[in-house]
Length: 252
Image (cartoon, rainbow, N blue to C red; front, side, top):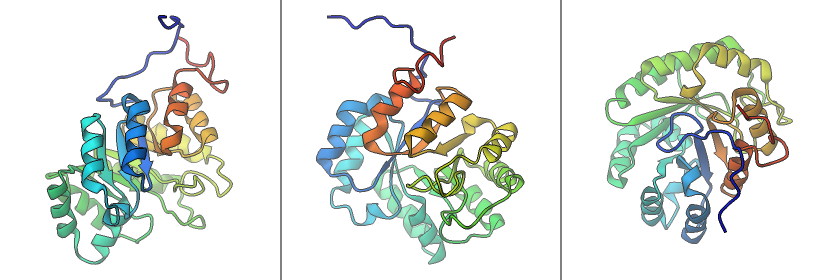
């Protein structure tokens, strides 16, 4: 039988600039990745192989091929890039990315401290070779950065050549743009989106209540990251007003 023709909000299609879903792969097996692609490929724009998992994954080549065939852009975690920078092996990492056919790189400083000017210089140098996603914010829950510094750093990194800036939240959703309880630092987010086009941002939001907050505040086509694989379909229903938290909220 044909599906009922319900009135749903418009949803952007891939390749998307808005409504991006950026998924965190913490070490999925090939079978698990195949299952994810089977049920959710149209909704996923990027998959990040978290932190340094790519170095220890035995199925790396097969999984990268699977994601690409499904129209999903794969990339590696920013912590791996931080470690390469710290050890003076960034060129080796970039060479490995080229071997793997990965053309995106994440430049972050959430774990390893990098001077802001040096970070911008790295972004500028890599932007000629790769698509750079930078990340702003610390994984340390005790490290609080004033909103004006967030805005200044995001703006500087976009000007340096970052295609998008990811706002840090950790896998747990308890750092960066969130308080240790998981509550959104709403004043911080307000200041960021007042100064920066949200299309250039990806807000990490691993928890459902965090996703709901961003969708209600910024619209169903806001960019969200660090989405657990098992939550992708549920997030898409939130975007389309097919779940109680957003039913009727996105009608034109």
